[in-house]
Image 1 (tube, rainbow, N blue to C red):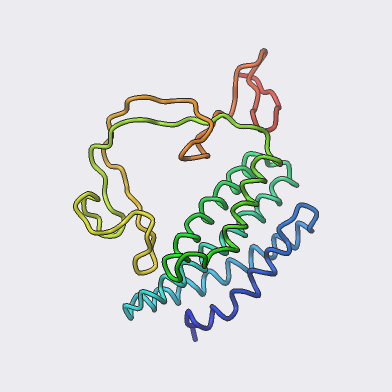
Image 2 (tube, rainbow, N blue to C red):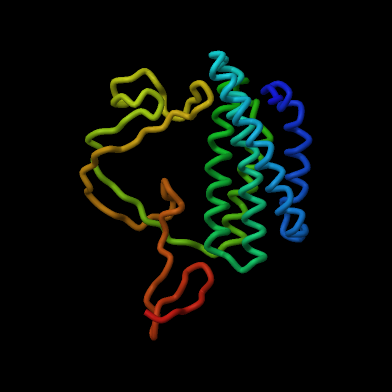
Length: 223
């Protein structure tokens, strides 16, 4: 028998605390991998519970499930970052850190939407930690940013033109975050920036005879 959102909420805090206990570089990689598997199992149960909440039109329940999902993924991505770093997989480690940051921002938004300002203090502290890790663990990165005029964008909730619908980007609706999907854009520029909207968009290599150098690992490879 599947569990309800309320039942899973009782299991959430102990699991999240156990996961955060392992979110440090010296922790055993095998323990971190095992925790990632435990989180995956919990998220599977949570997905079923959220679907049942949506079926009952229980928006608070669905959004509570979303908040738990996002929060656990934050720690899971951080664990994967440490696993990757200890496996000499710096590129993947960076991507996992950035996903942890982005999921944390979304989790904060949902928690505050559900419970009001100040409800996400622990998540805000976690976000601060993740931002520090970006600066002290990884080498400085150079980012790209695309500039242009958006001609047509669609709402991820109702699939109508975003400017014509009632949904708000970054808000949760029945267990889903509202986002805008750009369908048509007039490109104006591609810039090099220090504070990008998307930290996945970065310069990964530069020419360095006799080949190219990786900006993360500093290794060179042939062109």
